[in-house]
Figure 1 (tube, helix red, strand yellow):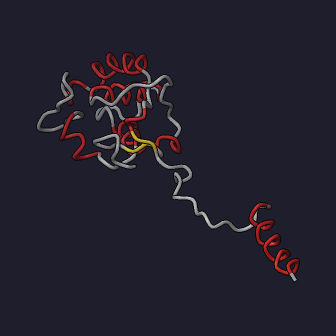
Figure 2 (cartoon, helix red, strand yellow; figure 1 turned 135 degrees about the horizontal axis):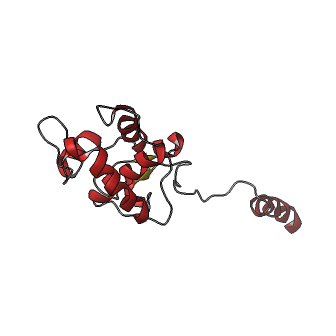
Length: 154
């Protein structure tokens, strides 16, 4: 009679050890393809340095040397910039820059120059540089959110 009780216990333990149902449940993990933020070092310092003279030549006449804008052009730094762009993607910002700027000749600069200018704007806002250069890939840019703080999307 002792052996009859042993068989069900072995079957239950065997199921758990062989990859069967477990009593433990995993906590929520990171979402697949979770968006990054501008705090993840999405551009390189060298790229931002290339963007500075391009900005000075193509953008500063409207947005000012200090990127603070004027009555006709919005500020590209600080609270004013975040008011317009917070929780939006880098792709949205890049698309506006590329298709509407400079206002007298939209989409007239090489794509790499627009990306360099975007890197310069990110640096001017205090977002950290990383090792890799930012590219113009719309899907990648769409996955990067502009946030006020590094923890905003976590």
